[in-house]
Structures are given as structure tokens and as C-alpha cells.
Amino acid sequence: RMNFVKFMMENGRDIVIQHIRNTADLPCISDDYRDCPAARKTANEVVLLPTYPGYTPEEAEKNIAIIKRYFSSNRGPELAA
Image (cartoon, rainbow, N blue to C red; front, side):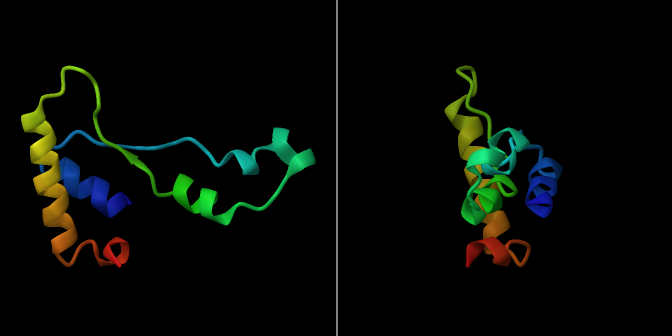
């Protein structure tokens, strides 16, 4: 995830890391705890792309082009599989 975010930022794209934790891992859930490995994995991999009303379709297209470039390069094979 960090390589992807760094690549996006190096290419002038607006992206941030998701910092919401897996709810099943929170102490307040301990009485009802169930292991949720898929949720934990997802919580550690999510990134956020801009979705606000003023974000133009042209900017979204630029994001798509950079994302495609990342995953078609040797930088992103771990997520492309």
C-alpha cells in the first residue's frame, strides 16, 4: 500500500491511507470477539481516492491512468494477482 500511495503522490495525485481499524479488533468488542482476518487485511490495505463534488471527471481520469500505470509496471504485482 505504501508503494502505491508513494507512486500516486509522486505523480501528483490526491490519495490518502485509510486509518479506520478493523472493528473486531477493538477492545469494546472483546465480549463478542470473532476473528475476522479478511476484515483485518482489508483495513490494512484500503486507500481513499477523492470523491468530493468539486472533483472533476478529468481528475478522476488522471487517477485511473496513473493507477493503470502502477499496476502494469513491476511496482504493483503483489496486488494485481
